[in-house]
Image (tube, rainbow, N blue to C red; front, side):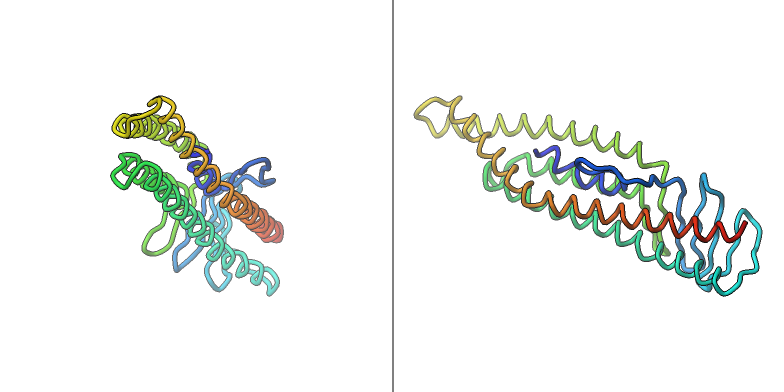
Length: 238
């Protein structure tokens, strides 16, 4: 359950499936946003749109009618709005998950638990991975579609490594507490403490799971809509 909670936000940020569903659209273009333009470049060509709707497609300027210009304006506005929304939503959920897990560890294992340090380190690492997909800059951001699969793989490896350390820390720390406490069977005391930690994490994940999944559906909906806008605009340029 801890692993599932930690990986949830990473998968969401990758604009991919969460839980039991998959998005019908897979991004195939990078998106570069700055104050002067929005560029959508990749497997579907090279589209550059200015805020006023003027554009170039595959290096060629196009004279647009009013309908085409409005399509272009709406598409670049949607990209400027939706990509930051996705990024901010994912970062918010990473932080919410970290705070909740940290609180559980502090309550179950103590304020000085080494597990808290591992969680903080993993949190920073996952946010670095997220920035490989949606890279933020002072003047805008860049979405890197080819980074999605690699980030998923690297993120899974980071979580697995952290989980190994967290599990070992939990056994060591709770074992030491059981010995100091004395009385009864120390092994049973350790297993009971581990069970309490597991239950607390399970309950917290249940509290957050619906929000994670709804966010995933909302991200997918925006990605589908954006792709429809791109196709609709490009079709008028042919």
